[in-house]
Image (cartoon, rainbow, N blue to C red; front, side):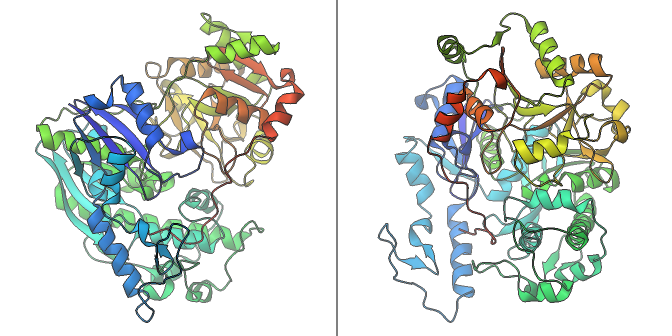
Amino acid sequence: MIIVGISALFHDSACAVVIDGRPVAAAHEERFTRRRYDRSMPVNAFRSCLLDAGIDISDVDCVAYYEDPVAKLSRQLWAGVANHASEPLLEFDWTAAGMPRLHGQSLAQLDAARPRREIRELLGFEGPVHTFTHHESHAASAFYCSGFREAALFTADAVGEWTTTSYGHADDSGLKLLEEVAFPHSLGLFYSALTSYLGFAVNSDEYKVMALASAGKPRFADRMRQMLRNGPGGGFELEPSYFSFDGSDRMFTPAVAELLGMPPREPESDMDAFHEDVAASMQTVLEEVLLDKLKHLHELTGSDSLVYAGGVALNCVANSRIRRDGPFRDLFVQPASGDSGGALGAALLCHHRLTGSFQPAPLLDARLGPRYDIRHVRDCLVRAGVPHRDFAGDEAGLLSATAELLAQGAVVGWYQGRMEYGPRALGARSIIADPRDARMRDHINALVKKREAFRPFAPAVPEERCAEFFERDLPAPFMLETAQVRHAAELPAITHVDGSARVQTVNRDVDPRFHGLLTEFGRRTGYPILLNTSFNMRGEPIVCDASDALACFVRCRIDVLVLEDLIILREDTPASWAIAEAAIPRHPPVSRSDSYTFF
């Protein structure tokens, strides 16, 4: 049975293909369109996934859509009416598309029939379409990729249709959500509102706040417990006087500044200890509530295994706390925990419900995206007379040469095989460098990634050697938890201010080439560890094909590009390339948002 999963029309659109209950392809639409967080129907990702799976649209048995459009519309309409009760329901300031607006929102987007219609018209699929709720899709994406025979289910995000947090259980008989917390009470919205207060973009920069938190002290935690009130069982509440979820410019009210004693930070302005302490406080309160709710879930289900998804599950600091202090023996967090992962979850859940078949199999490799033939790049380099080294058929030579360049201080764009699914670069579309160089973090942040100086980088390490360098003896293939660094002074570029790092372990059998590079670098330096960050510039999606990689290489200050078997040095690229690249029109970066998009 071949099932295509689709998530679309909200945040981060994606497509996934599941064959006989196994994920075979998955990709984000943004990687193809180069529009970050592209929310449109994933036409390009759909075509790519069919190609990667070796199938045609006529082979597809059904499409699984990741949420219930009717239930979502009911929440959108309720929110629009309830938050603007004294205003006219419709504003007839007609949009360019000729549609009236509901409190600033085009009615074209308030259309529960739109997903099915676009699946028919844009994807060209005429067969059955099954819908599942947003949090069912989140939960399924974690459970069916965990390898567990049975598990407790936990999801937490900003909001799906109405649900913001769910508790459930899954086993051979299927997946069942047992309890939920409904909008507007939301852990994700709590974190996003304070992300906006700290001057960062909502539904984008929450991970920056998580990084900032490690530098602060939670001295405002008591005050924030007034904003997020923990309750008995699975319940909690947001105090409404501090939040504004009516689609206005900000998600928080002036009461937040009164509570914390300082006005909101202006975007891109300087940060000080106050901002660090606010970040630390909100992280502390979030972790407290998560641990208490998971204790309830453990009592509710009696399971020793936990699977976890939703946007909040990308908070790797909280995930580490859950593993360390939580009540569950085993934990699996979905690497594509955000909305994009709903495509895979919907397809996997659809397979189980339609066939009754379920064979636990852990997801070991998140590289489910496309692989591209680079022969045309090789031909172009030859015709243009651009010096390069071709190691086709000589992997040992490639790894040796790359490791030597890294040991000499080069910043390397590492482009290999299939693209990752999920927000993390895991050695397929990565920028890598020497973690021992204390200047490397500032250099990459300022000149390559062009991002905030406080942002940390993650280390990649061979799985079998992780415990030598980090306080962790379990695999961490998806970079979703932190661990203390044992030799922090020797690894300054990947060690955060609190002595931790967001570790990625690399298994020899799963990714032999990246594992081999780490091993080769270790032979030269004594540290089989590389700084690993995503191959993109600030405000852009991770590179997808070889052309994206070459363009990013030319535009930013990467020293070396390793493109499959090819090594290209920046010093050998013609000056005309940079001029030509600068002249290419690009999609403008996604405009920052100070408020969560509920439509």
